[in-house]
Amino acid sequence: MARPAILDPELFAESPMVAILVTSNGNVNADNSLRRTFYVHKCLIENESRCIAKKLDKAAEHSDRILIKVDVAPVYFKCFVVWAYSGEVEDGPITYGIEHLWGLASHLDAPSFKNYLIDKCKLLSPSVQLSVLDGLTARGTDDDPKLWDYILETLAFTIAKDGWVNFIKEAHDEWEDFMRSPDSLQILKAVTLSELMAKLQIAREFPRDDLVDQVKTFAIGTTIVSTMKNGCVSKTCHTTESNASCDLV
Image (cartoon, rainbow, N blue to C red; front, side, top):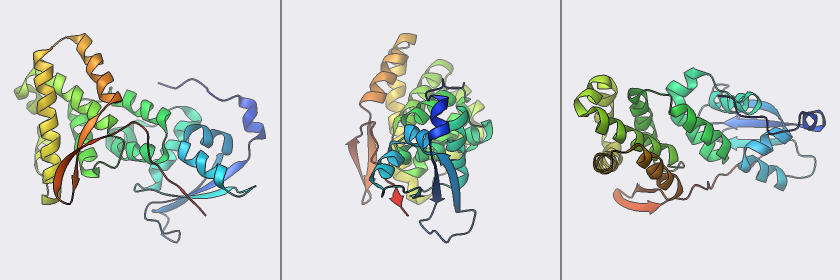
């Protein structure tokens, strides 16, 4: 689903191009798989990323080059640029890397891109959503938890409707992958399962279609998720605003 045009085409004729050096490990001298330069219209990238817009505003006059340090491969930033111009991302990165795209959207403080990714997630099967949930859990809680929470809500209502047996039968491989947790992720996986069971209880007690939207609205507005600090689990309230940051070259 392509988003409606939000920029006057005439702006592109007058907008300068900016060079964005994307590196996934903070090393500007890294090999090409971890470092890549993208050339994008300034008016477009400022409109879609609050992080980049703020850094360009703070840059010296006539600066046309910035460095962005992210924890995803540059190929995912390419997906963001393609979406910014066309309103779409190919199905492959959505199916097999949406958690990385979500992490990038959180880092860039790109709310429209986040909304697009949630819309695309709605089209994924429960088994793929479970795989995405696994990836989001592995990434930790630095990203905006909205997608994590949305998938938990969706899976809870799916399980309430179809039952555990049918759900595990459909998502057998993904469920086994999710349950096979390395020691470093056991606490976060336990927190995720606890949240899923809590949402499942709500879904079973109030199995009405209209409640789905009510619960999603609450989840998006005032999500409370668990975080792990120094090996201990604590509850932290997250807002939907991102504390994203970019660096200037």
